[in-house]
Image (cartoon, rainbow, N blue to C red; front, side, top):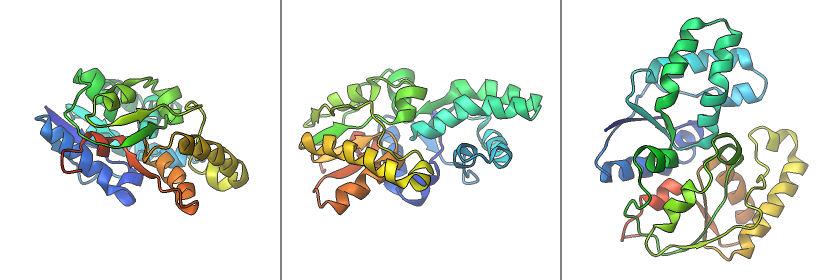
Length: 244
């Protein structure tokens, strides 16, 4: 299958290893991955901060780039949630009937990374090997918008050598929330403190998630506490082989 990869702003700028891992895994599974160079932002940051007018052309640009894709893979729950939940809304409020039709056509071909594996490819064992103690953080968008449920956990449970430890209060937000962490720093830090304590209680070596935005937030406090716990996007674990 020919899969178009939308890598997201966070991954492109700060976590390129995630995109490389997605490509490595999909290639290992026998698929062709293409990366449209003209891609930019899905518009989520603008939309969530109240700049709906500025988000609209970014949404239209995303659609124009990916409208003919066979399948679009996005290793970010929050970006997929933006596209599914708010692109139709942006199209309607701008009376853009063409965009309404294009969004309707494109949405069935948009997949978050773990959805692509479990729902579209019907896979739970992708041949990964990662001999480490791991805990999983469920991001808010993945949990509440995409309803990923146990899909990421099913994939992790089939990784050879991996010791998966359940995270207490996994449904609680880590406190990031994009600009929420900037505008409400004290509340965000308190929420993050609770999340980090839960992670440390697992005695895991690695905390994983489907969103690098959450992992960046979590890693910041873990690093400042010299906790000795690292964070990895789930794609990096699923792409891992015997040399890890």
